[in-house]
Length: 269
Image (cartoon, rainbow, N blue to C red; front, side, top):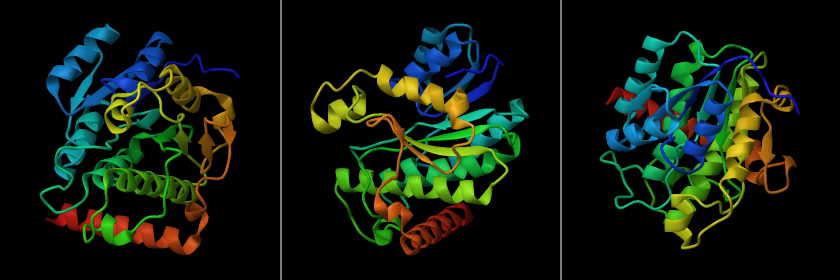
C-alpha cells in the first residue's frame, strides 16, 4: 500500500475521543490538516490540545439539522476544498432517544446528519476526494416507519438499522457520482475499545488502532481510489458484500425515499 504524501484537508466528525480522535492524531502526524468536530466545546479544546498545532475546531450537535447546516457553512466559509470527509460521529445508547421532532436520535445522527452534511459539502469535495462513512458489522433491515419517527426501537435495533441505512446511502450516492468523489462505507472492526462499546456492551473492547488504521487507509491509500460504492469489512480485512438488505433494490429505494422525505420535512420546519 502506498499512502499519499500530498497534504490534505480532512474533516472528521465526532473526533474528540475513540476512533475519531485516534484517526485525527494519525492523520495529523502524517502531515495532513485535520478539522475536528464535536458537540461540546470543552472536549473540542481538549482534543485540539492533544493534536497540537492549533487545529481548527467546529462545534455542532448533529442531532439538530440547523447545527448540521451551520457546520457545513462554517467549514465552507474557511475552505474551498475538503479532500476527505470522514463521517465518524455516531451514537448507540443515549439518555434521550428521541429528538424534539419525534425522531430516533440514532437515525438522526448516524444516518440523516451525515447524509445532509455530505450533500452540503459536496461542492468543496473534488472528484478525486473521498467520503468515508463509518458503518458497522451490526446492520439490520430498516423499519422505515421507525426511520420516519412513527415507530420505536431499542438501542441496538436503532443502531444496527441506522448503520444499514448509512451503508445504503453510501452506495446510492456513489452510483449518483460515477466520476467521483469516492464514497465508501467501512466497518472499522467489531467491538473496538470505544466509549460507545464500553457503555453499550459493558466490555473493554479491542484495540482502537484497528479501526483508526483502516479509516486512515480509506482516506489515503490507493486501493480505495477505485472503491466507490463498496463496503470494506475490517473484520475480514477485505471488501465484501454488506448485509443483504443493502443490496435489495426495493428496500434501498424505500430507505432513500424516507431519508429524503424526513430531511425535507426537517429543513422546511
